Image (tube, rainbow, N blue to C red; front, side, top):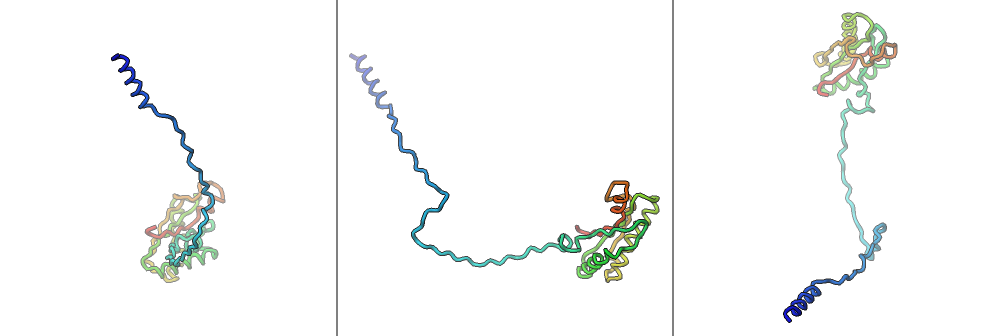
Length: 176
């Protein structure tokens, strides 16, 4: 009898612990592509905001003539061409209006000619740009010149197109 009673208790315990699979209805799917209709009318008011304009340095603005800083020269020449006069005048105006700005003019040449001759020619090119700036009112002490001669070519080729890109003076503002 003990065995039957034990078997009955075990059967009841197992029956009490079992669960029946009751399947719930799946969650309803809602369409969120269109907003639900509202019954009340809501009004919103917006207040205009004032934005401060972002100021770009005229030296870095590609639309400004001051972003142009290379003057090209003819072969064996240190004469600033007329096509660069407006650019040099704009830089002179900027320098006279911005008294803290200082400028370095780097003179360059193509590879033709001796090293010594090219250093002197690069110096004459930088000096000719400096003279124009000084005549236009820029203090001479705010302009530094340096000649690299043929040492820093813009183009590495050995043809007229490359040489034309290397015969130049570059305007570089300190602090940029």
